[in-house]
Image (cartoon, rainbow, N blue to C red; front, side):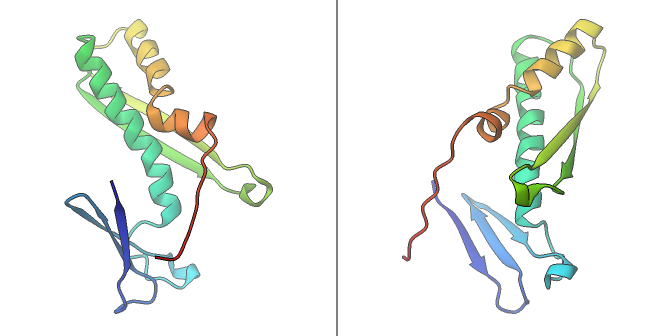
Length: 132
């Protein structure tokens, strides 16, 4: 699968991102010289963790017949040490439904095992960039 990122030359920094049949707009923040017309690349990275946790919880709850009625994942970024090689993300889960304490704890454990969490925390990502 390819993800295609194209510059929107009518704006200082805005780009469109095509993922399958989906289009997203990304932009730099105002201090970066953009117009803040969409999330930044860091926002998308952080959102990948939150969305993966949410989707994993819904999938798991359905599979295990856990009455999970609603999920909200709040992702907080601490990039104050990014230049030193430390990028911190903290997630908080708001779970709705008639859940026991045991089910809530089970879902908490499952959230931290979502594929993107594992990817961010435990693999080496190799990236190559070349001219097309």
